[in-house]
Image (cartoon, rainbow, N blue to C red; front, side, top):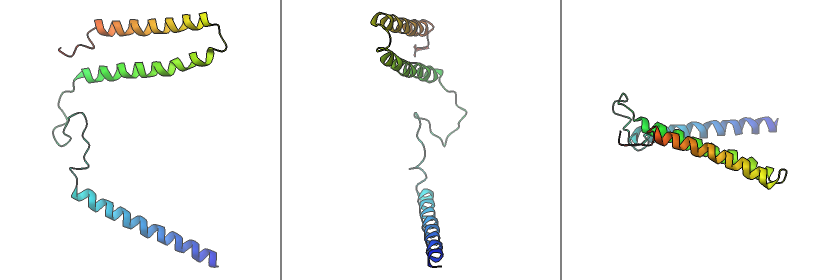
Amino acid sequence: MLLTITFFLMIFIVIVLFIAGVSLISIKMKTEREKFSVFECGFDLLSSLRLPFSLNFYFIIIIFLIFDVELVLLLPFVYNMKLLSLGSIMLLMILFFVILIVGFIYEWLAGLLNWLV
């Protein structure tokens, strides 16, 4: 009997604290709306959202993701150094980097890195 009363008292205290916290947070959010608005890459969220977006930002993000994934793909080379010979590991790493460099040169020659266009 005492355990159930304690349990319901704890539930009641948690609900009261939750409601008090949510009400205080919502009052603060209403008074400081500008302070908590998201500022992303210099775009004003309160203005028109139909403005043209530069594709150069998109291409830089894609290039960053490619080279970020490259680091994850290099981790198995460290593990396989114990299993394979040094020559085969070096050959695989050189092939991997040649593919990355050829892709980077292709992006460069295609003009994806040119910001003046």
